[in-house]
Length: 130
Image (cartoon, rainbow, N blue to C red; front, side, top):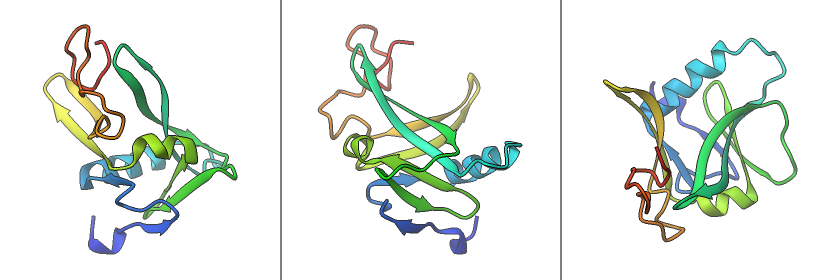
């Protein structure tokens, strides 16, 4: 990606939620692979936690709500609702390929919620049991 592909911010600043170049490129690739014409964005969400806090994830969406903050990326938008944003401020989303598989990783997810970043029961990184 070039510098021209930097996000246009509409309520969701890079300091609120940042994407690495690898994450941005993979999100664009996945968004372009979906064959549904009515998709509007990638929604980043927070769900009730496992044994050590909140869970973080992403999905495609065809609906923007009045509570969403938006960032316009080159080729796709990102929606985050205002409640989830309180748990996501300062988080960086990365895309990592390892011999065991590839995945999106939410870095610094526990800095705002006081979590340790590891599971209290099993020690798994990321705060959830593997």
